[in-house]
Length: 120
Length: 112
Image (cartoon, chains in turn cyan, green):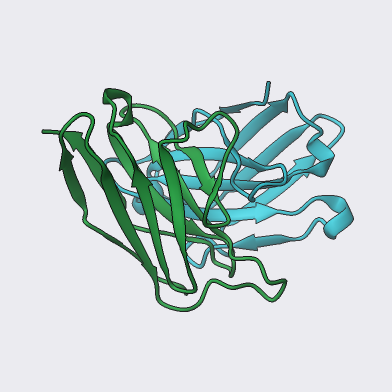
């Protein structure tokens, strides 16, 4: 069974940093494109960015609002995805979902999410 | 960026009756590889999103056959043949043809 478990969310002050982790199991992590998608309270879904699998170059892409502030990385040996968030703003407040793409689409399987609140 | 526009934004439905959601993209979703990366997601209250349909019309593993997708190019539709109580939630279309990947605003399906 595919499992994606996010951690690392919490309350952080504007301008601060936070690192989210996503522990993956139940599938071959090295074969997956991994993404982060966020959802502000009471709002819709917003793609944050992704990291491709190594055989596809392991490259990253980001949404414009987070480019230059957020960094996605992966540790295939630990089957873990990361999201380093710097220079956080109040508008980054959201539930952050880890999403795996295993072949059907890049957004096949979703974790439960972790809440990040940016507030003074 | 490709803008995804869903209609309606709210859909009150009687149990056992059909429901239909439309999604229109601001440009064609046909990729250079010939595929159309249009998917539908369901988000039940208090739950994370779940993939229902991918590449326009393919049901994902475990998805009941009362859900179906259709369309081409820039116009797509999700249909529920007979709405059940467990179908209550918000439905999103999403495209992964071009970066940045984008989502529709969501359509809330509720029981009348």
